[in-house]
Image (cartoon, rainbow, N blue to C red; front, side, top):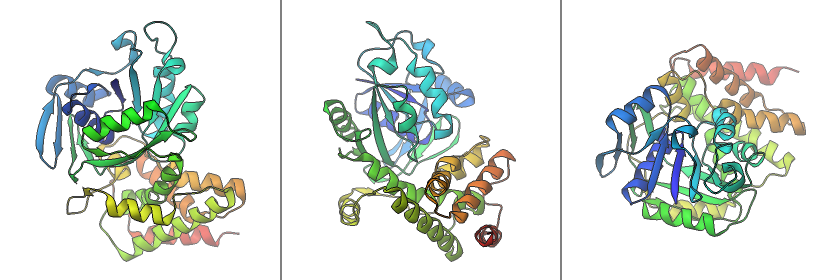
Length: 334
């Protein structure tokens, strides 16, 4: 298999670098200054066992590779707001022997949220979900760090909408050889919906900072309560509590000490102009509107995070008191 990492940022570059270290065939897809740095100086990947430089093939578009190979796996790691454009571009790429990538190749959706799989299935015959637990940092072009130990991260894998097959088991095996815990599960979306509950905190981190605070925890708890009510109304099932506890107990992933900003905070720090809030808190807003469940806290968090991104406001520059007041105002509206 050759892995084409579509979006070689914090998650994509870590997965790609680790796969390459274990002997995998990897191509990185990136844009702008990051692509230029990767081409000129290689990927500088720092993990718990040190920093290495990986000089891997880097492209910005499918045409630079020519025809794709029949054994290629497209690993989609762009943020969800960029997924449709990436799926269109790579889905139309021709594969040696005939047909397009959308017709012949597997695509693995490794983003936060639950929308990318739906977007992919409109275009690709074979879609897989990946629920990624991989604390990592990407703040400067060409450099990524992922400091968990002894394993670098955990990736639950499965076919979308559900099931398993030979392809996903081989991907899991190769991720395991590359330093990841990679369980293959029948219902990968149950894991992704469960992770979505954790990702509702991203907007709070982005706007008020990653440092822990009781008021932040309370605001996140309110957002999660809304999400659980929306899930119940929509008939959405997350992983069983016992299964989640067992996975946490058995995992060999120990995060590094200290406070780090999540993906939305990092996007603001890099000045990308967008965050994933529409597909995290916004997913809860969507479910609430579809099923008649009020979601004022998630509505507020989505709106605030987007303002920070669109207006290039410094991450963490809002007080949690002000953010809570906005959520309270939204909740009080008839």
